[in-house]
Length: 317
Ligand SMILES: [Zn+2]
Image (tube, rainbow, N blue to C red; front, side, top):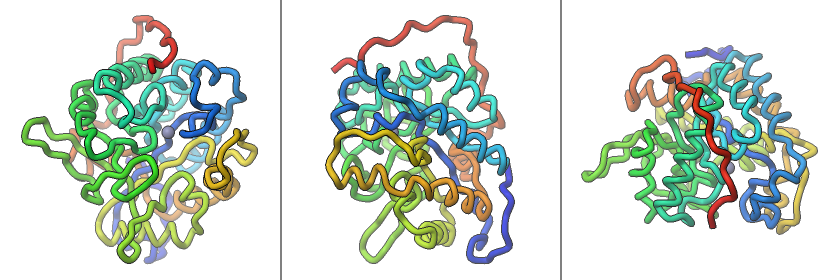
């Protein structure tokens, strides 16, 4: 476990909770619901920011000696294999964010199984280590798609980090607010690390990731983390390479989505630096280990990468 430098501010360190730091590694055009993202055949023709911004993230984490979980898209791993290797070489955890970035509730169980399996194959091939966790694109495991939990277990993953315990446009799943075991009498238990939410009156709001992290002032983000700490729960921070890119390319989209996707990029790095200075962070797997929910393993198992994988074609529709 890596310890970030800590301050002596009692408002930040009211107990010794270690929070989870995660990055969903995809490009700017993988944002859902924009025309440009719909055809994977076009993805290769867009300017890319994923390598440049991920390198920036790796540099910041090195500086603070913090390890994080990188939930990487299979499509990104196939296109930028050396990037996956550099993330793994930095001691970070490699997780999967699916292969094609499709919302789980729009897929059949068979298509989801194939997509998840393909993503794990390509990630393990380039990382050389076992993939143990999954985060669904857009937190898209919703009530009615519980079959996804069985498939996550079937492909050999140890945990899920896809549930968002509040209402949102593409997801939302009522569940415990801290790390817990999803139990179903008919299936094996699955450890879950849900997204953090800030309770405000009767409402629940995300504060610790993506557009919320960029748009909210630091004092609200700290308030959310403090609320999690007081409940003895870890906060889960999730960011994307595009959250750091002030010059992020854009595409035609409704004004409200443009605001959510393209405001506040300049604030992401300074805010992340403040968090790394003031709180303790680790990978999602390490946080779940602390709660006794996954096996205690210092390092993920090494994978034999001598077998060449076939390149994936177009996403099946
Ligand atoms: Zn995503």
